[in-house]
Length: 535
Image 1: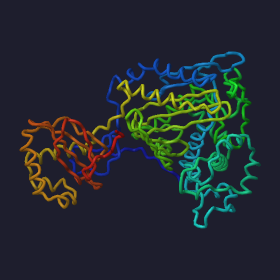
Image 2 (image 1 turned 120 degrees about the horizontal axis):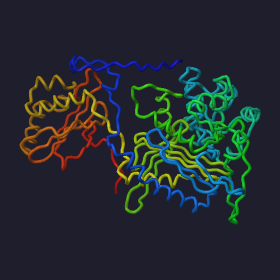
Image 3 (image 1 turned 60 degrees about the vertical axis):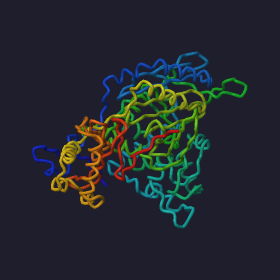
């Protein structure tokens, strides 16, 4: 099936009136969220020296020969720094152009290749794997009622294959003939396909073969020409031999006696699609910026090389993995995590969506992470076996958060929310059944009759006195929001949600006295829309 990406907008015209609005598909009807703090970037950049101290201390503490790290803000590599050496024998320092192997971070490039082929109509995520790898047509599944294994399962670590670290690391150089022989012997399952998360290098090795067959060219060539070249990631390669020796980081293993052993580079082979890429900080900064640029959804030109909607699709939590919680320093810390397509996705007490991936192979450890709603990402690459530098990145996030500049984009109110605010305010000032019925969804007065709603408003007005609107609608989304009334004896919050009809009408409406002028988005049931982690 060919996916058609139609960006021609349909405009909302105020002159036609609220009830003349039809389906609205453009930023004037659905405005994208935006940053509102003009000093945001300066605040974030002001703490780069403190972040550097965290990474330098981590390098020393973990005895890492060489480390590079970077911070991406709003589509640019805003900061990059290094510590240590590219090669212990010569003492050559690490630079922003030094190339490290990024191991399993390669999986996201493979996922991009699959989605690009999907968008071009050359495969479907619902294709049985057997369509592209015929050996699966004869492969025995673990139960008689197992559904056919699909491309989607391979992408999201839900194929039911056993977790295969570190076995998979040592298969990097396997040949195409090796893979065919393994497939003919079959794959043992650890769980039934499609039932739970299980990390599988094997699955991404298979996806490399799918890319080759669907594209009609070798996997490496497709990724290089269709993704790397178009992102201008010119220093990125699949083979150590393709990287100039003066730019290449040597990988090391720390022995129990405290001595370093140089790790021989693992050759590239058919499993390169699960972990073969090498890249520099300059190139990885471009890659993280590309992912961040997919957010928010908006109308402007989609320049690729993969459609923004598909890049966002990668960052959806398709396969939940675990929920962890602990109390540290009297504070509850909780994290939910799982897998998207080639990317890990998590939520914690600080951020609603954290996207990223680690990478580890003999000689190297790496980590990349970004916050789609905040326009900020980070990465680090180390020349020590499995030294995934997630800890200093998490510490750096805490530092950025303390600046006051690490805030989400704010969603402007859509025209329909702003217009509905005026009509709700009119009812607050003087209730008229005819006006109320005109904006009400069919359920509104079944849930609470008009007389009951009038009485509740009357009691509240008697308690708070004269009121005026205080500020615009605070939008939770394009069809739900809150605005406050500033009253003689306090603040009233007005919560409303619109039904999925054209034109949108009010399905939920509540007036509540607030302890302060705070924003408290309410779900249609009247309860909180979300619960923050707290002790």
